[in-house]
Image (cartoon, rainbow, N blue to C red; front, side, top):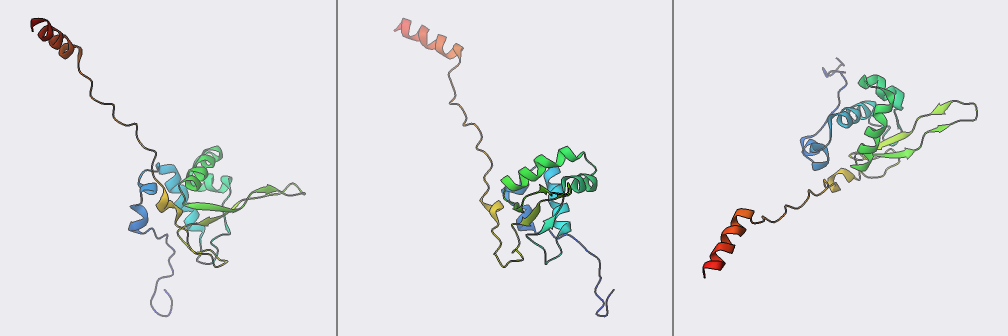
Length: 148
């Protein structure tokens, strides 16, 4: 506790309006867990420079590192995150992870929150095919036509 009696405990805040979005509601649990881990790396001053490598994400989520790659893509496609700098391998052979921005928050360079996830629409389901008459109905109609 600090002098004002407030707890110094850290937490990840997810608003109901965020959780009720179609993009979140239709998303599998893996990418959801990854988003929580990305938000956990956010410290209120580093949006746009959130670093989380595939290896670190996999370790935090207890999955194989090849599993989280598609989860990052899903979060990008649905508009929850944006890559602000790509990953690369430096001249000394030491790699650098990509940096990310959470679209629900303003970035550290002063850009407003884009909230791209609000624009997400789940792929349209196949339209229902019109109800076709059964063979039985067609046979009945043929008999009626003969009787007339």
